[in-house]
Image 1 (tube, rainbow, N blue to C red):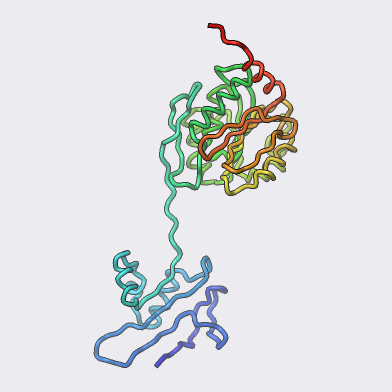
Image 2: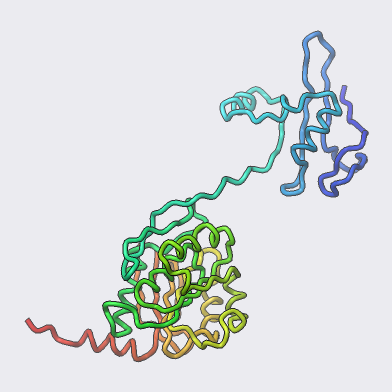
Length: 317
């Protein structure tokens, strides 16, 4: 014998009480076997769309209404108990949203050169933020310093760190000689718990500006964010590989007023991605591979000619 309750129940889509109709599946049903002396529990199934379902309090209220103990039915079984129940047919099926683990940080990164050298930096645990590998970062700054004519440090200037995340690239830039850095990071948690503490720890907060906004929005409204100070001397582009279309992104950057004829752009990109030989008025002066990661550096014509002339200088022994 099967009985479907027609009493009012909570509708997950509307948040109001409504009665079941013949055209809709009931939110839950109760099924009883033949009455015997041993106590048996009904089968209860909660079904709802992710993000619009019943809260724990709603479930407790419904279970109490039908004379059931919420603590017994809503308690979370251990993985071993869950597997044992699934093997013999569980009497209770409850679909809950997986709770999000608390985000935490650790100190694995460090500043490689300059006045903040060897200072450890915070980074989030997990893969939600992927900082530039230190070997790639070190190579990028060596190339920039050599191309700028000052192997020991960067030419003084302003740096724009797009998809900054931990801020390790922009912090490295300040440590090596840049006078000002603008960080663009859209995740408020990363800004509050990672980027800002890193700037405070290195003592660079006073020469930094943080923009908690999408990179695409920043590029579209650049003058609103940075004023009329003109193009940046340096720009780093280190996006999540699967979250951007590099062709569209680089086209937007090449047309931006943030890039000038003497700017340098550092781009980290994945394997099997085609990067053009130019970016607006700039030319590609270096393209290196580090495993599955590639590093492209764009700069002015004079930087490319300088590197070529340096290679032709004979070494006297």
